[in-house]
Length: 326
Image (tube, rainbow, N blue to C red):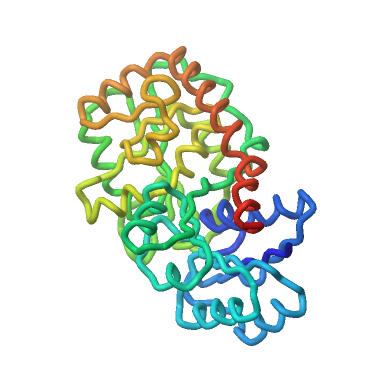
């Protein structure tokens, strides 16, 4: 078995790192052949590399499985069909959600949420539609140890600029005293005037620095908040989200309060290893409950134990290998 990867982004880009690079490195670590054939640094749905060159490499390097991560242009489909002609297994690693022709072209589709897997299977009739969690490097992460005992509570949020303004307005609307929100985002950029406290990522021209984010959260944040505006757009866009933000945050031993969607509900047991409030009042109650430093420490430790055990790359990679060998 020799796996080749063609992907949007690079190993500093969030979804590429957890959906490609971590698995690639995990395969090599476990004695399998794995090669990144093409990183798409412009984050376009097309493949930047020369298609004919990729065809030659697939043959000459005896690659038996090609994973297409989020790329789905006409040239991509040309390469998929070439692979199928020479009996190379093809896999499309989906994003949160999109409708595209790759579902009908490849041998297997992998999604990061069970909701997306089921929609692709039931709505589009894809037989080999699978759900695999994103792979984190959780065993290497430090865990929050110093619990803030002051009256001032810092809430932390990190994510795409498209959700930044809603988060800021929603937390402000709760009107809680002695709570302040700190944000890390790929804003400012060409698409928004909304400001984050710290910026990094593709839209800022700076690499996404996971180590910085870990230090920032551990040193400055007491509670992670992930509110979602479920009334914005189609519900499927929210329900199809992967769980990587909450698994990442929970692995650090920081309690998480998040709007309930299917992937979050699979991981968070409300009041035990995190909170899933459905109304503004429930949000206020959850955050007020976590004002107590003992509660934050207890829930943080429970959440970290659960995530480090179940979502480390060494656990997730087995699900990929089963499909590679199917």
